[in-house]
Length: 79
Image (tube, rainbow, N blue to C red; front, side):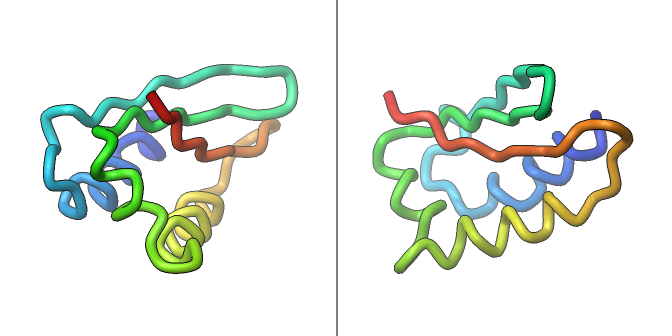
């Protein structure tokens, strides 16, 4: 699971204008392993991208990492 967190950090952090405000919270549910991204308000649009293309690309990469038992879910938390 640490590999997925490092992958998310490596992809997302260079895209941010406020990288110090970025954090990841991991929530373990019965079906999913959810990675909640806490971002600065102005960086949310950068991560989502036009028509959601950036977040779709990030999710495609993260979801392709093999896991055992649970599916991975990437969630952007709005403050």
